[in-house]
Length: 464
Ligand code: PMP
Image (cartoon, rainbow, N blue to C red; front, side, top):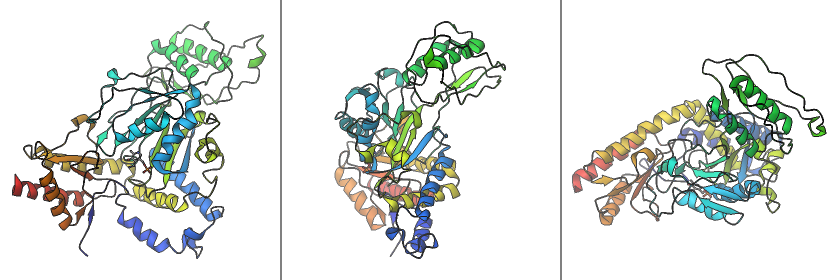
């Protein structure tokens, strides 16, 4: 059979090398003499693999220690429900930034569990991401949900939004591991932002009274912020997770608060003070949750990777099924019941392949090259091909394009027919938008994209 070029949007092309490994291991997992398909999830071999998959995710994305890594059943759609079930209890309301059909579905699901604030005006034409100055964020939201890459519309975020301390929840199903993600995005705060920092900690429910006092005094030391405004807050058992970098080297005295018995057993942990020429800044853990269905860049359908900041655990709604409860899954190390073991195994082998091939930085370089080839062919076509998406929001994973203006559906059918005859398959656009869509995930090689681009040029020469 001649070569197949698979540009499907998902389940998507897998790396050849991973197939070779899986072929060898299919009936003999880890030298046990039997297949993983008939191995207990409580065996040492599986449990070790489960840990290795978590470790490789941590290494690839540089996930800080205060985030749990979970493997959840139910795919991306399962997490559309799990997100509000686990987080909506904070304030009963959540912000949804709808930039395509997948984030629209996530918002629809969340409405079952609380109030949903639509951050952007409604539209049925998803062709970009409005500037953050136009966003209607609710400061009282439990979380802000975004989809970093809309698989159907080819709309991708090229920035991490500033949610002013409200936890950011990101569906990265179709672009995870295609670029570096700053999981704990660093936000430099100027000295005047002292109150903002405190407000953020209050919103996050991080600070007990003494912690707040300590923070205020530290800031007073470095920032000359007022020290006498400590606001009594409910004490929580959440570890305060913040790193500070200061121009000042000396540890200030921690003031005792006499007469307040609630303060006696409060401990302040995990503080890092250093001197720096850049002045004072605080690292705010911006991503609350990252989740990704596996069947595009990290394996096969049925499992969803979830990366969740620890302070967001322990607040699921009482109706949350145990299987969807991140806290229960974290406690059980993602072996709460029989997990989708094979899908998790495939994820592990795919991620190890990413690691062997330059990690996410390596994938990002290839993604940029592949995307520029396809978009380049569109740009150079004198309007024969067109991409509806604004340039700053064009996806490097899914390139939707039309032929003719207005689009000529007969010509598009002809394009797809000719492509299939050459082995270039699964290029049909999603039924909601029509046209053509080339999905060029990590496993699709530059050579394969060059073959597609050559076909696009030949087709244009024939029909333009
Ligand atoms: N989010 C995004 C961005 C997707 O592309 C998809 C599936 N294509 C989903 C969520 C839903 O994933 P699943 O089919 O695993 O439920």
